[in-house]
Image 1: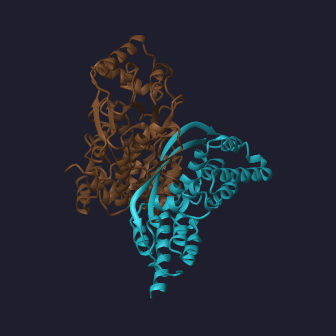
Image 2 (image 1 turned 90 degrees about the vertical axis):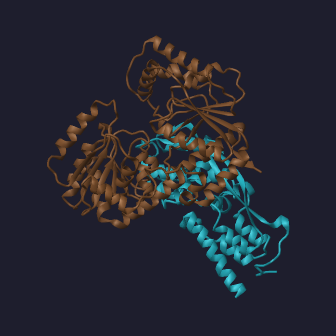
Amino acid sequence: MTIPSLSDYREVVGRNIVEELYILASHVGHRSIKMINSTAVGGGVAEMLHRIVPLLNELGVKANWEVIKGGDDFFDITKAFHNALQGKEESFQEEVFGTYLSYNEMNFRATDFEEDLIVVHDPQPAALIHWNKHRKNKWVWRCHIDMSHPNPQVWEFLRPFVEQYDAAIFSSPLFSPELTIPQYRFYPAIDPLADKNRELDDAYVNGVMAKYGIPRDKPIVAQISRYDPWKDPVGVIQAFKMARKHVDCRLLLVGDKAADDPEAEEILAKVRETVGDHREIHIVFLTTSIPTEINAFQRASDVILQKSLREGFALTVSEALWKFRPVIGSDVGGIPAQIIHGYTGMLVHSVEGASLQIRRLLNQPELARKLGKNGHKRVRDEFLITKILKRYLLLLLALDQADQNTIFLT
Amino acid sequence: MEKDPKRVITADQVFQFSSSASLEKLTGHKAHNLAELFGLIQSCPDSSIFYHTFSAFRILREVQVPYTNGFAMWISESVNDEALAEKLASIDLTEHNTIASLRGRILETIEAHKKENPETFHRTATKPFYLLDVIRIVYLTDKFAYDLRSFRDLLHTISVDSVYFHFIESRLYTQLESDDFSRWIEESLNLGELSQQIRAIDINVYTLEELREKIVKTIDEFLENTEG
């Protein structure tokens, strides 16, 4: 499939949405923006930058993207920092911070920072700003991780660097720490034209279900999410078994596992044990997930669950809502930003709650349809890649006038 | 000139559609009960009041949430005080052309409710309320209406943000009591009766898409009656 251009988005998000992006971009003029992160492939940030950067260029903004370099020692440290900033208890030796800074300095020396706006993503390159004391351009730190309970040792080390930025961006007020600089909220987003979300032929969807041996004779309830204890696949099975006493349906669990996750095998074993010989529960374990197949599983489902115990933003919810699926999600992390209980989905707090909502949505197709339709609207308004483009354009326009509450472009 | 939809207008009377967009800011301020929320509403910038009322309306109206007001949503979901949520949600944004007046009305509503229900005021919420702020960016589009028919045709092509801006938000900038559409129809096209019909449309019962359709339908009926 060819890479979609901005004009391809007109049909899915609305012609006038794209027209207004061009109007905003005309006010941005030829201002330039550089994105900096630590990986070119793998992970949601790289995936998004691969789309955002060309689309910004198509709008006339001079956008480029650089990936910092580092040895295994650097990336081991930044991975540990990442986990610590998300709350993992760990103590670090002083030399670890020295190694982190030396790689940041090396990358600073090897990079030009001439653009009007520099957006530094996540903690790995956060200290780059330190060597750029006399900058005339604007620097913004985009943090994609949940920093609500950061490890104090790592955070006290990083905070002085972060506070040198002109602003920071977080995905939710739940995820942001206290800072002396302005903070903006950018929701993460899905790409409606990506293989994981684009329209599919029914024949392809049927083919995928046949390939994995899942009959389409009964309504399908699914959780399509990594095998991870925090995603609570065991709770999903328990909720399904309770609901199954009242409504005839199948459960589909689809997921992969993080490559370096020793807990995944353990949770899979527990999942299989909880399933037993139940003929209506189908477990699909993918070593490499194919985006169009994930898309097909979501489109073949009648109800989608995201029964996580702890979450980041959980864009799997937006993926399902975009496909007009009714979603039952736990009231944790970024899920309530996507699901307004009773209107764009159902929020639950327990296995029992999930079970009740499965029964309700399978027995009340009108309600399920309404939730799917409203959920689609919510995603269209807030959680699509075109909204991220708009936010970057607004940021470019607002950073020069940060003290203004209303900016009139004439 | 009354009832002449083909009336020729001068260049300065042409209607140029605008639109608006928000850049949301995190403030770090939170409330854990109604007393703290009251304090935040008293002291926060106008732009925060705007975000939790006007912006919330834009976002929540589309998914048909009954409480199209961020304060009311939180009070309903996290404080479980439905009566106060209903009272705040029923404040009509179109009756306020300044944030000061809207803020005053919200504070009065909460204070009056407190007198009747003092026990709920310090009840700890199940989730905190996060105060947000917003930078509004208002911009002109390249769509111009020269008469009623071109205006009606363009209504189908503008974004819901543009519908929202002209019908709801712009009164904060004009400080007038009416929306831009009905005012232009009255002042530039001299169609007072149609203007009144459009002004009377209740924004609280329609999504913005439905609002757009309702305005178009009202104009179509008017055109049918006047043009035969």
